[in-house]
Length: 246
Image 1 (cartoon, rainbow, N blue to C red):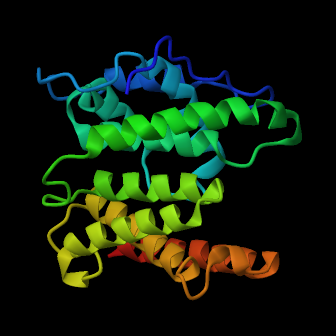
Image 2: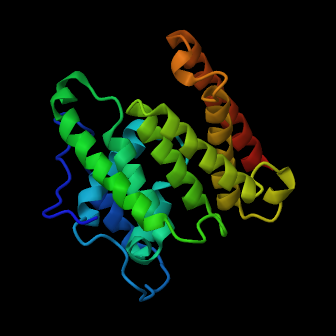
């Protein structure tokens, strides 16, 4: 699907100060692998400069609740132009920005909600189009899993609970295909990958248990939802601490 003159909405007034470009540029000082020339798949109507502020909003506002990504990893992959030739990373990046746009906002940001919802939907459509291939799921990756999870979060926030549940199940199935639920699968992983897997697996496990068809998240009282989220975050911190000390 093509969009003429595609423009992402401006950040709402009062959003976190945008220092994302400085942080992004600082990665240049690190040693990165040479950029590999491949077939271009990134939508020409979307610039990475327009996405950087929304990636920054994710890390400043949402990362503590959904701690599944590393800022350094994202910036390194973007500098290597992975999103221009790697459909799974590119799709994840688009879904991440859509997710950020559709999250609850402060009172003075409410006016921009309709614009952000429309643009987020466009990013989701581009994300889904980019990732779908005949053999989708044959070679699962963390990027695939996270894209499905982020699409779930967007749909859930928009009240599309059946579609959201389908995407959450898709994310869990992909994680199971990677054997994320088996402790022995972590033995051969390096420290960074192991932590990424742990974060992803725990977020999926807790989300699935809370949002299952038998106990839908939106049926829970506000107090129960808060307790579930708090327990999940504490559990995640304990496991990550054990991972670092082992």
